[in-house]
Image 1: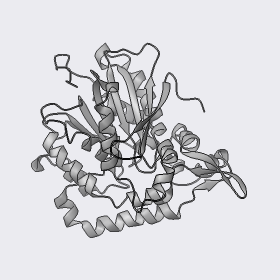
Image 2: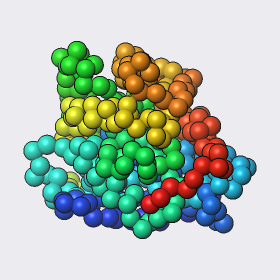
Image 3: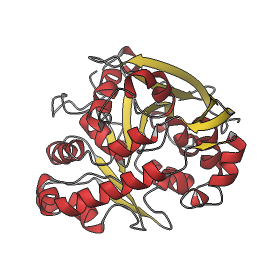
Length: 338
């Protein structure tokens, strides 16, 4: 399917340091993009893939185009988790032999390598994560000096992060919820006669029927692949549902990311965006994450009306507007040293 104008897309595959797993990414630019502008990084949620960000990215590019040149979009990069999307296909031989899933921390290490690479040398970078992707984005900062962050800002969309203290107080409940989500994933349908049939089936059922039609079409086109079976060709999810299901009980990465929030929030603006509808992350987890008395000081907190946890999928335009509200910077701020 054609991508939203005016995006120009290049696909990349990167090695992950210390592992044989591959990291896949899309680079998004526009005709005449400004080298003075911002470079945006995007990390998706569990069960998603890099292309689902495209409607949001397209709208951000349009909205930022009317701002001063340094606040326009130079380029955007969206990454696949190593067991999701195109990366899952490339890593299939390794993933099928793993007893556990790939953690957000392992994903973060691969993105961190990219942030340190020549691709971003001299760029002014803003990092954006959704759900589990917020943990990965936060953990990419772990090895950078506190006073020299790699980003101009960080934007956490519906973060699934929580402190060690909060997890300990609600551990039984958190594991029960994660295991229920895992069971739903394992029981879910994952093959269809064709991508067209998948699109029609998904569009009639929750939660997919509440998605923006553009995002749902991208899911059917890029989240699925054609697979040969004894009965012929079928369309199957690129992300193996066993790998996806095993991801949910991984709490360590999100607990560590929450500690980093407290440690880094005075050095780099960390914005938080929630959906107004609490349909996945418990309200007490959200309230705790932005509790300034615990040392976590968000630069801003935004709630998007009529959106739930899957904001990227449900309300990409509203999300883009909320993100763009955070993408106007003081021209006197120094450029990052990278």
